[in-house]
Image (cartoon, helix red, strand yellow):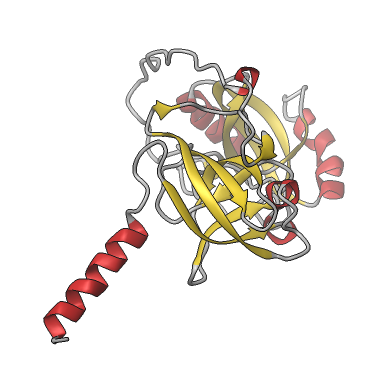
Length: 259
């Protein structure tokens, strides 16, 4: 075999491996593993917090929110999972399951297993099936396990972005710089739906002698909120600082954990 034919075969093999699943019904076989305690609570590639008790998975290239039916070929047990992370990062493995998903197909003891993964829903096409739905090869998925999709509403009109991003959930300086929090807690002074107001009031708090002010971008009742937080403190120190913050005029101040 000459080198050009060899390179062509390698290219085709790589293309099949990477782009093997594009539409509903596509099936791929390979090795699966799972991840658990070490990553529990850490951010996944799509911004969610990894929950080893939820029914999610990591996949190298399938779009986030793709729904997959993963079957353990050793016992024919299957579980439905949703893609919310990237991985696995070891050769010959095609998917990383949450610990709960691995447990549903009796894969925890083995650690890794041969599986087939079938695309149920991808890029708005197909049927979303409730995460964690299980069965054995040959079982029909009950209709009551299908997830009802609600029409997406047009996003609300937003004002021009202030200085800094404040886009992803997390803790920022009042200038919009992401901050690496060391101690984990602070004292929440106020909360706003307008980031400009949060920035303005953060600057006012500086002038009152509260020098370590942060803005925590997050969500509350499906609305983006910007929490004004004083300090990067231990939980005990934060409790001790509540009186100081209230004394500066923030009567409703309370201990708040940083994101």
